[in-house]
Length: 191
Image (cartoon, rainbow, N blue to C red; front, side, top):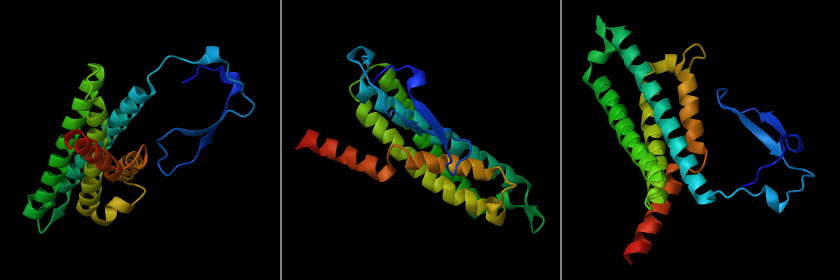
């Protein structure tokens, strides 16, 4: 990591499918980096912090999707009753809740390991990101099903939470990549 004069670096905002994300293309063209600009930072630890932060962001987006879905199934009437009174709808909401709480617990654990400088932080951050990715998949699918066609409209706030959850899955590696790393590390420790 390096500490540079901002005037030496150019940044241009990038357009991504989630308009709530602030992403930029950063250019270091022609920038000379002296040894004195090096900042003593543990890059591996910074990655763990980034993974955990992204996992927490994804959990927050998934919680928002669940909150919107619950509000919808409580107010939407079919056959004279709220659709939330139907067992199949309740099962989907319960699956969403369980996925969110699992991912939240792993994200909190990862944050605690980072805070305590616990050597398990690498594994914990990967587990948090993998769980958040799996959560995103369940919540994304069920959230859209509970909203039906209304979930696809631009007028519905669901689109923002769905985009944020999906963006989180795409950044810093997906659930499958992190599960593979966890498996490799576990096998290496026990073989």
